[in-house]
Image 1: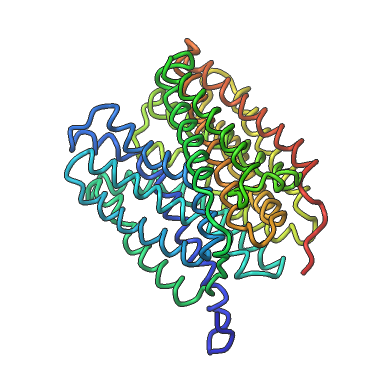
Image 2 (image 1 turned 90 degrees about the vertical axis):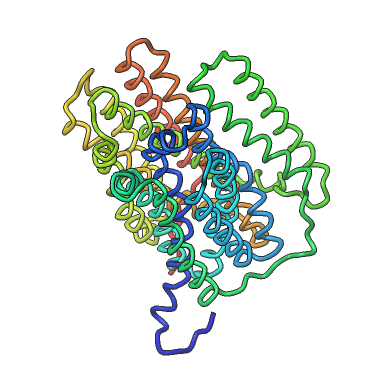
Length: 458
């Protein structure tokens, strides 16, 4: 990236803007589709199973190929792989918008998921490269993390507005200008990343981890609908464990492993990855169960539900930027621990609020969970990326985001299962919130052991 020219300040923000635009598209597509699928189902005459695949097809491929995306970025260069991902994602979004049938739409959604799996690991690696100074990197990671909250909050509201005004196909068409702008910014302002072509891709390991994550995600999603004792769910979980075991064996024997198991010996690396799984489990489980509560028990519309959930994520950008600034003075550990404790207090407050609390009483618990999660995300991200050797920055990013996706899928599946099997809807909801609070408390204890406390130097 050139360092001379009339606008160095603008140019210094351009890599961050490019990377965050790509990440925003990925997370937005996870949340915006939820309010659109009922309309899509009616328009394309899709069965309930087909509707589920419109949502889950994206998630399965996204989660299953994150490590592959990280390995490709390390081998071929993160900028190249990021641009590939944005291109695949944008073209696939256009295909989704033009889909004539449900099967075509599901296939296009899967292609979107693959593009997302290339974008996300490369995005963190590019930020690590573009902002080598610890203080600037902390700010960049904070803004990157805030994109998840902004996209999560914008998704239901934006989806509801688009579906009710111009139609569901615009849920996908909005990705086209964002994708083109992201690609142009990346090519013009992001430095080429060094590739390490001498390191071969371990395809057997990549296939094993993709199978393990996809089977686990599919089984967890089905558990919420079929029940945890359903043979298909148990078989999927068993096959997922077998694939994970095959991956571990392969990595110990491979000359050039996709995820060197020695990296996991680092307390910061392995602990940070588990942190991501825990707080995603709690936060997305809360958002999912709260969404069902607002629609099924309180009679809110899709747009009304999006607005009701807004307090949970409205503070995320502020929290991420604030934690990025404070970490230079305090280090990451106090911020991650405090964020997790605040979020735990929020969900515990919801669980203790009674059987049918008035909506205003739920605003503070939702804000606490959203603020605390985002406040801890910056430090957790920095912990994992800081523990990774430069040659494995893409792999470390992929590991962190894979565990987060597993946490999200588990939180949604367990929350849905509790609502379906508790007998009393309110009991299931409060139990889900209590489990989320326990996950946050566990994350706080883990952070006190694995997150570095030393402030980052300027």
